[in-house]
Length: 342
View 1 (spheres, helix red, strand yellow):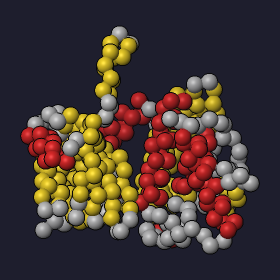
View 2: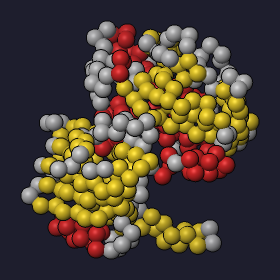
View 3: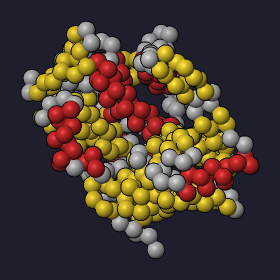
View 4: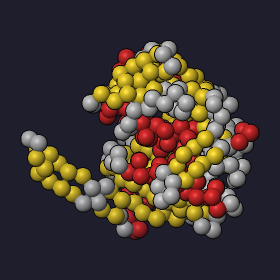
């Protein structure tokens, strides 16, 4: 019997580079055996404050239907020119098991990543994985199911990117590191439908200086401020980049922007743009310079993790019309800022 059982928590795993050992699809049940997946701190089965590597995990999808298997479009370049373009190809249902067989029969098969996990109608869920198979190729697998259970017996240690050796390497390669470690709704709850603000703990490093390790703040508001900082300076001393709270949202007249007010506490990160460089300062204690491209990468990675939590945990909209418009304006501005980055 497995020691750890995680139910409907796919978004609290890091599947990147998890090796696929077997895939069985029969009687409306899809079962995978994978190695080297990581349980994030947000996972209910991970009592550590870092991501932990799972030796061997069994992933079971019940009442499952394969919605699609799609091999993505790609281009072949030569001397800077496109010499071949291939459209995306959707595989016929009759070929699904053949794709699974080909995936596991070869070597070097991995889950490249979880592209989407969301709840849908009739108490169902949908997930999309990018599968990277040496023999079958790279494809996107989308499944619909009633429940997914991930079972494992033990951890092999910290995830590779949590080790001291890797962090020292990253400190040399990247002068900036921002990650969402944990999340919760108000009062540490995981299921408060009325709370519109996502809270959590972050990790922030500038150069070799770890500025924040498990710093608690309102990460949803921080996500919006960080998105704004991709294209503009953040130098308002009264508006913390990582605020303690953000309980009041005031919509613009056209509902496309929001003003957020909270308490005066928080962690400040000043952002100053200089052509294609971004200069970062944390309350005069630490500073770093990073390319705009790299800065944007870190911010989008952070906000996409937040956005996925909201997708997986729909909120109960306020009954008050003005409060509802404030929340709507928040997401309108969020999506607009994010869409301009692609």
